[in-house]
Length: 256
Image 1: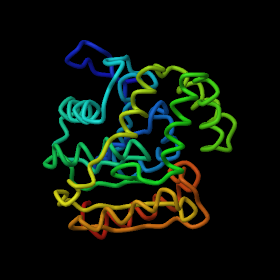
Image 2: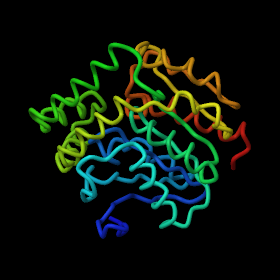
Image 3: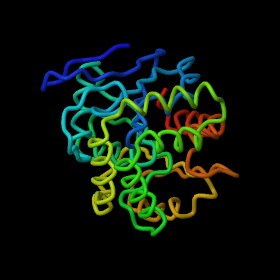
Image 4: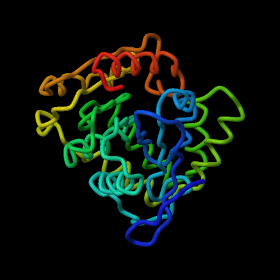
């Protein structure tokens, strides 16, 4: 498994498969790159990069209290390491907060931004509850939370086990901090600065999250995709529909 040594001398792991237009996928707290297991098929047509953020999955801990900007700098450093000038950046759930911060801080590196179940800040009560519940479970039993999340994302028992074992490697303090900093993150007033094409993907049943779409009316170039009969875990549970929407978006925006 490839890795690079960051400025603090820590090993940060990633997968880099396929060729062509490069995508970088950013995972939610604790889950690591294995949550994007279903996206490997896209490597037939594109270059897919799946990092484990520090303290998550196989990557070593750099900070016990990382914030969203910290992880955005880490993604920028990864792009330098891979010598990628521009990428299509994909963020899933709270990983979308990191993706948005990268796009806002380093706009020259982001050709397009894709958010799967994304939000610029937590405004609904149920989403707020989900963050608090995640933080509580990380403190009480990270292994139990890993099992719950793996079961909510995948049906295949082998993939469930693989994700669960991967999440078990995540550092509990860094995992908790990722949730906590995400809960208090807010880039909503900066969204008007995003000039690259933006694709928003949501499951139609996740009303407590797709409620956040109204914030993105401030953006210059926005495409909205709704996955029918789906909740929040669309990259895992509804991968074919997500892939079709991404490929249509990439073709419509002439990015290949």
